[in-house]
Image (tube, rainbow, N blue to C red; front, side):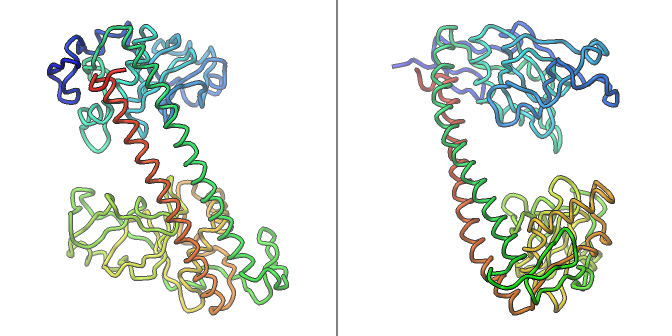
Length: 433
């Protein structure tokens, strides 16, 4: 039975009696980073030198290729760049990938958002798992605001367990095998989710452009990119099908005015295709602020469309029985008596709707959609009775498909927890190989 001792470090807890705890600066031979060459100089990029950015560390254990390379001129343009010899640990210090860690299997330089740790093979392999096991604690320690920034100084002084080199190799070999098995199952689930999403998109597209009866004669819509539509269907601009097209605003005071209860305040991160998600993302404002923004209050059956940022184009129907308001990144579309909200939501969600969003971005503001853009969307629609049939059919199908996706996403979440627990137990010596 392994004799344990207190490590003196909260996140580590007890470790085997013969193990040590050391700061990263005392383990690795070199710790460094890099920079970004002049970004508008085209001669500095698309060269032969690998250049790792924090995004290259997303959901991977090994860096075998990079999204961007630099030229020798770009490399020479600044003394802050150095080509590190593989293998080395690469850790994202800030940005969306903060805390992500991988082993680089290629010689490369890095940008300023990535820190590099070089050492012997066993130190690199074991160290990567030790840092991965402490990722959440590392980020928490770096939390200085809404966006954590892991400094090199924090990394250098970060303590991790240190068994002897032979046991480091045994642990790394064991974890390589076990995590690969988990990752294989996870990849299969992700593939199944993507197939479900592709089927969902195809089903929506076929239904809102061809209807439920594929034997109905077709006619020319008069619009090149739309092509043919079923006889009896019409094409109209959205501004003639809506009583309201507008968005809200962020109240003065920013996030400091948000409360834990009150009037629901919907933001773009709450809007997904066909769904309004509030779990862990719900924000509220008080009634006084809501009254000041009464012109942008949300009503049941309003269509909410994200009009800026990375989530532009995501759309859902508001079907809750509680008061709500929106910020400036979410557009309210309130349909009139000529189009049903559900049908309109599915059309905007379809390939045609997303094509219009992309087209208007290219021709106008790449950063977002204007209300004029949205009003000029061309909507294909049958009569109200048939819109209702289509909506009911798709609602039923979406419920089944979305539940299947949610189940598989939960399975992936469980695998991620299992992976994290597995790594933690072995790099801290709670379990031995």
